[in-house]
Length: 164
Image (tube, rainbow, N blue to C red):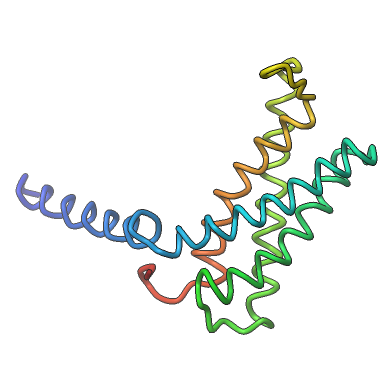
């Protein structure tokens, strides 16, 4: 295979990948809308998690699961209507959404809990943060990223290339 043919194939593949990434993430109003919904979602879900964990002394897994469940219900409603303006039926979208949320939850909070098991409690600006609180914060960040990818590419997917 000639060098120019290899290079042309590489450039086509790179161009297609670049178009897909830009369409899905970088230049997308959907990402901005997802982040706005995510901020509301995070305030509701994380606030509830921390209240349940620290205020009501619930176990870590129960607090994070409950907070994420309530946040997920808000997320599905707002992301379907506002973020993705999706025509995907609730019957089709809800099971996919639940699957994405569960995978995102288990992956994100397991990883964050595993990371925090290897560090000590910390104090920032005279505010003590327990390992579970740190894990909740890290898990929420990981969860947002994995959840967007899953919703965009699996739950509310509209076409071959993502659209804004």
